Image 1 (cartoon, rainbow, N blue to C red):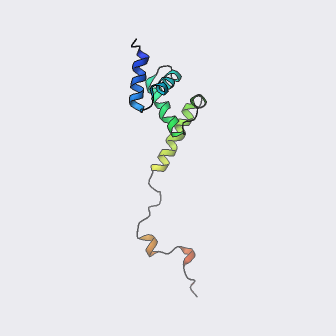
Image 2: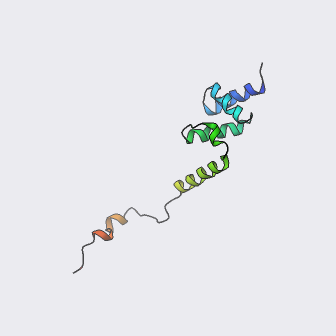
Length: 99
């Protein structure tokens, strides 16, 4: 009755907060690998919950894409913008011409 798969499904549902039926599907697609199934779940959430089977071929590429995007988004701007600069220095286009 208490198969290892049931335990995995319960743990997956607990970790992700999804329904046991959905947990079972992710675990089936991941060949019962809990870690892989959880990763797939969160990846599919990021992708807008697209079909699992499509994304599983280019898995590494997709993850790399996400990693790159995340790092770029979280990086501080290369050119530091101080809060006082815009007020004190008008943009070149709005400077009055010296005549």
